[in-house]
Image (cartoon, rainbow, N blue to C red; front, side, top):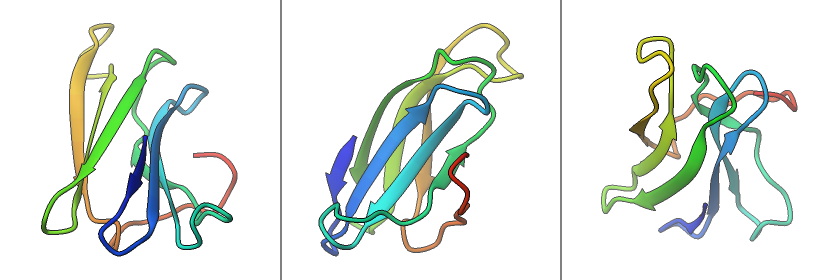
Length: 98
């Protein structure tokens, strides 16, 4: 899902369907010509059946990212999850893998 943030940046949120099964985000300050390192929103998926990521920015600037996922607590059952995060205050990883 690609969003235009209030401050002009682009925000891409997506499911990573290889191990470690994750929900990720990336930000761009130059209209998508380059992207900042990955932001890990979730990294606890138990299999590759994750995704359908959708995001929206709240008036306070925080992002709400929804997706479906299964984790160790839910076992094989999938559920609709959400992560609320601040694109200005996130921990990023710099490797090519989540």
